[in-house]
Image (tube, rainbow, N blue to C red; front, side, top):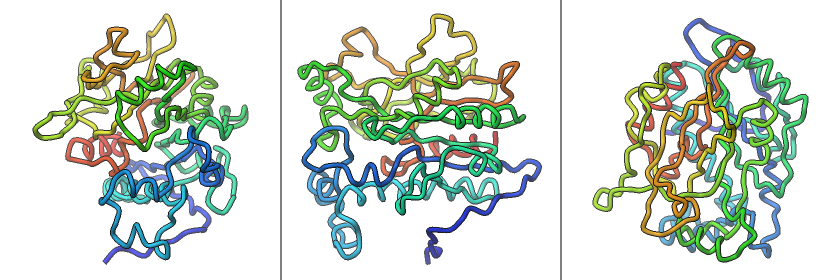
Length: 335
């Protein structure tokens, strides 16, 4: 029998304990801002649950998804799928650390706002910030939030994982957008879907020279349908983030994490993902066959904590999971 679920309660801080990491998730969206998007606007919004059911038919035709008395059928329904799919990650980390994994939202379902401040940071050792906010909702990190995260990273042993999602359709040229859509092939993604305004502003404020670009389809084995193994820079991974990891999970449109400085010293690309080259994309036409999927910025003289850049989809079972992915989760929890 599944455990009882709770909602609408204040967070109870977790005490520090030697050798046990406290992991938290912060979703940088306004839930109402996403759920209330105009359905007559085609771009820069999530799908409704009804659209998910239509495109993925019959995967979501069980009553628990399709019955309007049981599950929301608008955009809010598709947002709730994310929460369903993060449960396994939360369970694995809790089993590993002994601590529950709270999930905070910048603005939650009931309209309660929570900027990224000490209420989130004080009892966390590892913080995951998921950039699932559409840029049109205007989420940006304030100066106070950036300073709070800087203070968090001055604590010895902390880790910040930032996950800006994909940036599809940045070009004003409709033919380019059509090429991008044909490349990834997901009918639930509009021709323009630009994510991550909050996480991009947070990285800029912290002086981390990494940006999310594009939505690229990973290569996978046509027989097994498994995603192609990562190209891992094992010699650079001195902390063992990818120890025992061979692959993440398949998702049709993943961001390339571009390093945006001419002096990339101290910015390590630990994993690159082979791209499905059957359909062209501006990024592949420029000669690229892999995209950056995990970037690590180790501590510096004025920052004691680690910074990782990786997409939020690799913490979600909406797109599958296996032993390799769970091993990555455990590496984060045990770091």
